[in-house]
Image 1: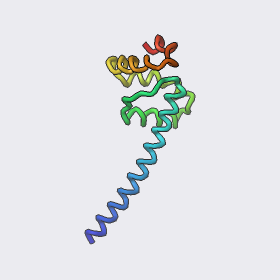
Image 2 (image 1 turned 30 degrees about the vertical axis):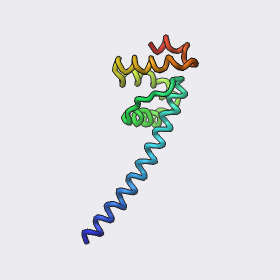
Image 3 (image 1 turned 180 degrees about the vertical axis):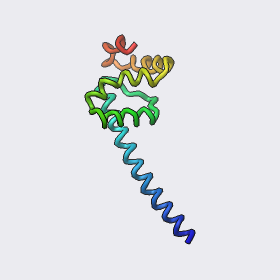
Image 4 (image 1 turned 120 degrees about the vertical axis):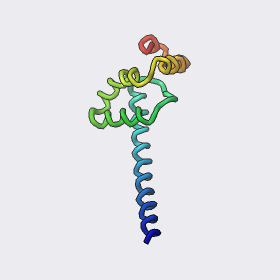
Length: 104
């Protein structure tokens, strides 16, 4: 009896984690799409919470509204020190040169 309960738990857990993995993959793709459409370079410090928040926002409000909101979310989410770090990394990308004054 106990073995059956344990096996059911593992089967359900496996399904849960499989579904979670699919959702994470979808949310990550959505986040990358938002970043790209907003004209921002890649960010190497992206907490899962921010990815989920932006993916949820996109689902509720659409891509256009999410892209418009994205810079404000970044400004709210990251502290000044982290933003300074990100801007210093972004300065390495030649294609973002014209946007640096806006970001700073």
